[in-house]
Length: 177
Image (cartoon, rainbow, N blue to C red; front, side, top):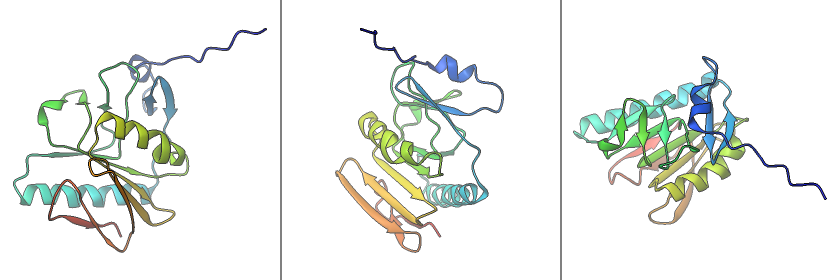
């Protein structure tokens, strides 16, 4: 009887050892390489970032909005490292020069063909269990936004043409289109 082949467990040190320009995420010790984003992906990311930053600034907010590439160390371990497209962190003590240590309050992932299974399944579970309060999956191909409000245990879908209410703020909504 053959012994089961043991899958290698990678660590954050392996992420830092990647060649210059190579981007990857680490989830439960497994490396997921990241393709460069398309112009449409970057345009959506930029617009969302701008809307969120403008809202926070105009309301003298205490939260920080950060766009990828930005390191998020979800758990206090060496086997989880992600780079969400957009992170909103309201507990500034989680931030240092390396990134965010702990769950952001709000995470937005913009789906690309290569990241679809990871964004819809793997990260959904990781973000929920790590303590992220709100998770948006923005799908340019479907022109849909799936909004998970983990504190309220709800999931809603919106089209790009609709105002998408932000759960961590009472009076803020974003139209993705």
